[in-house]
Image 1 (tube, rainbow, N blue to C red):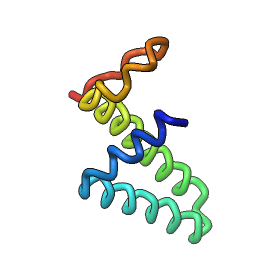
Image 2: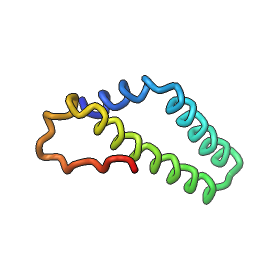
Image 3: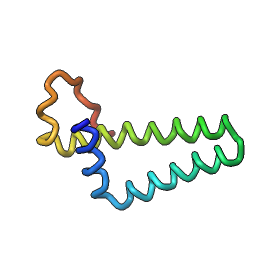
Length: 79
């Protein structure tokens, strides 16, 4: 839980990331409200893909905050 809380806190430092997350959440919610299950699933997959990329980037850019997890596999650095 501490690692997730750390990532959440660090991700809030970027207004662009926050706007992107809100857009992704709205897209998922809009599709659920419209009864578009397939569209909602696709919107959620797209959202999760950007989240996983963001986590890797945040951890890489802030490695000094994540050194207590020696057993964890290394995160991929953004391209």
